[in-house]
Image (cartoon, rainbow, N blue to C red; front, side):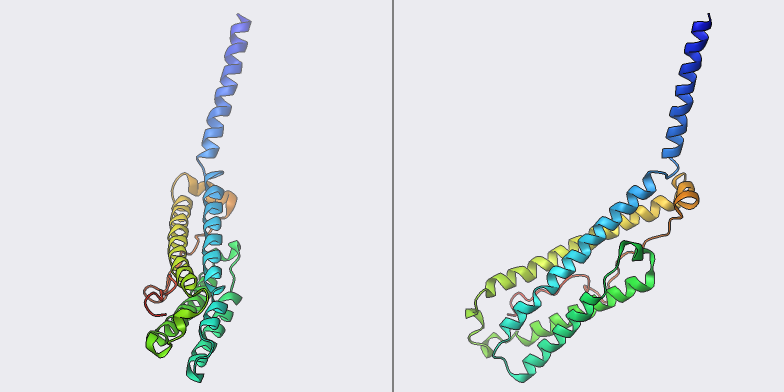
Length: 207
């Protein structure tokens, strides 16, 4: 008889532990940090994509060799915009700061605009008869197109991860762990300050 009660008591304790564990898991103990780390990882992809675009500027400088003073002046603007854009780097802890995110967005937008201006300047290929003979021209064009696509995809994935995280910390029961245990704050999605600024400008047909 006592053995039956002991077995029942043991089973009961296991049941209580299982229920408690499920309750803890359902209160954001695990889901909140999991969603947060996913968003941070996606942000790293965004920064890597923007950096890949910035790394193409030396190749643009090679394309502009031998150009007139005006063209070199435009390239100087590209280089300066690149320097500003790459000087602003956000750590994962900055993703809840709207002001820092806005500064990053504005710097990237300025860089996008300078690249677009450089592309328009070179739109008249007839003015640069030797342009297409420059070594690695086709590779440069392909790389620019590739960075445009990677930036677009990286930002889309980051914003989706942020949406999931922000939803998690605001909905029951995860909000309990988010507020009481993690002190979670909403993350800021990437918002281009001008239409299309989240993507590097394509110079296809312009170089």
